[in-house]
Amino acid sequence: MNINLIPYVAIWSVLALAVLVLFIMRKTVSSKEDDQVHILHGGLSEQVTVAQKLDVIDKWGKVLTVVTVILGLAIATVYVYSSFTSRGA
Image (cartoon, rainbow, N blue to C red):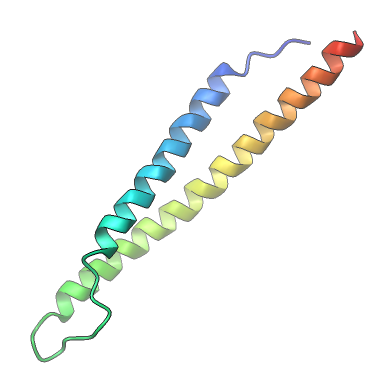
């Protein structure tokens, strides 16, 4: 049994790249984050905007990371299984 895993590895690579891009985006956005609350200087709305952006990036980062790991494990499992079954034949 010889399975062509190249399309699945290509999809996994795109997902892994998306996770990396989200990681870099999060680092870029969080560099603008201010940990202190500035209520008197009117900077609160900017802090809220940055926090909302980070929440969205974090949500998608977690989802894509889980999907990427599961797909990677599935590809590895199919590869190992096909390696064992092709040697026995």
